[in-house]
Each structure stands twice: as structure tokens, then as C-alpha cells.
Image 1 (cartoon, rainbow, N blue to C red):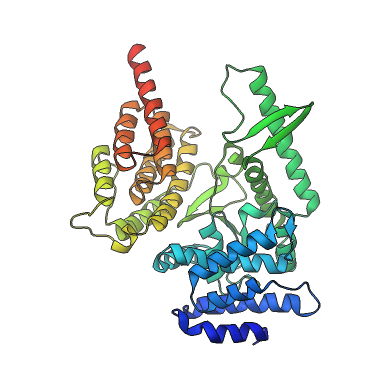
Image 2: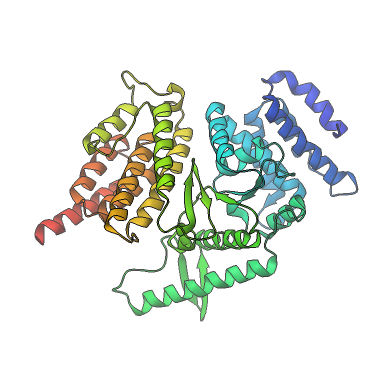
Length: 452
């Protein structure tokens, strides 16, 4: 075993201060610290002492100290343009710090549950895109070997546009996975900016038509030059790079944990197939979704919601009953048949709610594109079930609330939308976004009454 001498001494001194990590987590931490040592052994840039302190804290299960040290390292050695740590150092530090941060704020039982469910559906040798912090750090940490792609190759979907990250994964996977070069990144950027310009010009020329500029996409013309700020450009370009990676690796199956769905990702939506808590990303569009896929997805989430919250939502379940159940699950539920630990962990509840809400988004997208009335009815049914399950998993998840409201509005069920937002606000009375939704839906209801 290769370890820096100073690290070994520190680990020995701190080992008794906290409960030791489980064996697989300890192996992950040791592997990452060894890789950092090897990356700096032969004349590399010196590693700040905080890095070794962080690995020490992780090895002893001191998750809070790991989180604090990662914040210090980020601020002092990897913030803004100050990339003092080489990619081989920084991303391994981030992997360990990010995972330990999740352990410090989430029940490890459910961290393992998420990993187990992903490992069940992603075949060996596939490419997996982790969209959120849990989706990236949990799978990286609990894989047998990230470097060897065991059981599959994990990529951080949200960092593909970062040239430093691309440098790291090019070296990490050593041609086992074909990845975009800087030319392809530039082409994705140009594709996005050309599209953004077109949408911006549409909104300027036709102000009375529906806006095409995305929410959160700040586009301005300054001295004849287009300037775009916000997170949206990065999100869209990352999506385009996911598309490129899928095309570059035709021999590998691809899976994705959706993050930040946007209309511009419609190239992806026709090819997304529910697979456990995530999606399989097929190379050719599915028109329509396979009956077996839809049935398996329904049965999967029925089992999981029964296990976590002790409820099975049916198509016939009344909206009032859903709202009442959410009220019970937000307090001390009588005769609760689910997992009590799940109810007590708001972060975990939000994670699983977000995963189910992503499925609702796929079904909702397909509603308006159905080729037959029977397909449309099926997609409506599956979309509403997924919306309700996502809401019950975490009634305070704003994404789940907004997704269900948008679904009800799209189906012209304004009265149901009013009932739902009224119930949701009782559980989250100080949420300004939900207050805005309530006001908007009230205005829609008044308009309908005045134009009957």
C-alpha cells in the first residue's frame, strides 16, 4: 500500500476519534488518497496540508471536518481562476469531500439504497452520467473502481463544459471512453449561442408571442455584442456534450440521472427510457415507449413508495386523499407503514422525490406528442401518478409541487390546481414561489369564470 508518510501518521493519530467508515467506503478513501500521492510523488506541485488533513478526517469518519476542509481547499486553492491544484488532485479531493458531505447530511442507509438501485439497472461497461451531487458522488464512491470503469464509467454531467474536468477524465479513462476534445466543446458553445441569438431575436421582434428565451437565461446586447449570463448556458452546453459522448461511443450503453431539464434538451427526451430511479439513453427515439417499460416503471415506483412512505398511490386515488396523505407524512403519521428513518431525513426525501419528478417530466413531455388518443391517455395517467408519488415522497420539494401544477394546468384542470396549491401551501406557508403559484392560478381561475 502506497501512502504518504505524513498521511499515515495522521491517520493513526485520528483513527480513534470517530467511528471507522464501512470497509467499502474506507477502500474508496484510501484509493483516492493513494492516487493523489502518486500524482504528486514525482516532482508534481506540492499539495496543501489541508488535503492530507481532509483524507485523514475521512479515514476516521469525521465527516463534518471533511466538509469544512473541502470548503477551505475550494476557497484557497480552487476558486475562480485560481486553479492551484492539478486536475488529478482536485477532482479526487472533490470526490472524497463531496461524498463525505453527503454522508454528513443524509442517512447512509438511503445513500446505499440509491447506489444499489442504480447498480441494478446499469450494465457493466456502460457510461453513466451523474446529474446531481448525489448522482455523481455516491456512484463514484461506491463503485468497485472508478478508474477501471468497474462496474461502469461515471461522468459528471454538470462539468463536461469545464476544460479542466475534461483533461482529468481523458487521463482517468485512458481512451477506454471516447470523449469530446476542445474543438467539440467550442462547437457545442457555438451551437448554443447561435440558437440563443435566434430565440432572443424572436422575442424582440414578436413581443406578444410566447417567450423563447429560457427562464434564468439573461441575454443582452451590449455595444452590438450578445452577452449571456446565468447557469443556463452551461446546462445546455453540457447537454450537447452528453449527446456527443453518446455518439462517440456507439458500442456502450448510456444511462443518465436527469438534472436541470430544459426545453432545449428535447433532442434527449425521445430517447429517454425509465430504468429504475434513472433513465437509459437510447440512440434512437422510442415512439412510443414500450408497454413493458411503462409497466415496469410503474411497478418499480409502487414498490419503492410502499417501502419508503408506506403508501401505494393508484390511478383512482382522489386528489383530496393525496393532499391528506401529504399532511400526515409531514407530521407524526398514525399507523405509518413505511420507513421512519426516511420521514426524518428531508435531504433524502428530496432526492428520491426529484428522481420520481424527473420521470413525471418525461411522461408529461410525451403527452403533447402522443401519436394516438390511447397513447395520450396512457401518458397522462403515468404522468399524474409520477407527479403524485414525487409530491408524497417530499411535499416540501418545490420541483415536485411545480411539476404537478404545470401538469394540471396543461390538462386545463384549474380547479384541481387550486385545490392542490392550497394544500401545498399549508405545509410550506412561507415559500414565496408557492405563494406566486397560488396567485397565478387564482388569476387563471378568475379569467376562466369571466370568459365562460
